Length: 128
Image (tube, rainbow, N blue to C red; front, top):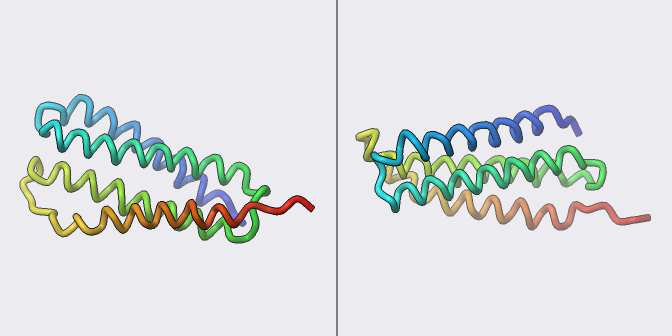
């Protein structure tokens, strides 16, 4: 399994979580309601946790079987769907555009994240 692509995703997600966290704490704190800011922070938290999880998994890929790639792909798709839909839904009023169609994407992203962890459960190599 080539890990370069997954390492780049892990670093990208972690980097953008820090950037978006700073943006939420400073630039958006006065323009978002407390409810929207909490949602925005939830997206950041899930993105950072899963970005770090991707990094750990890729750096320890030898401990997993060939199905690890499926878990990583599900996790990447889940982060995009879950966190990024939350970001856009949270700032849609600030942007002045309606993005309500993204509402159903968030739980799909959550299901993808759950699926990635469930799949990961079965990818651990057995000790021979």
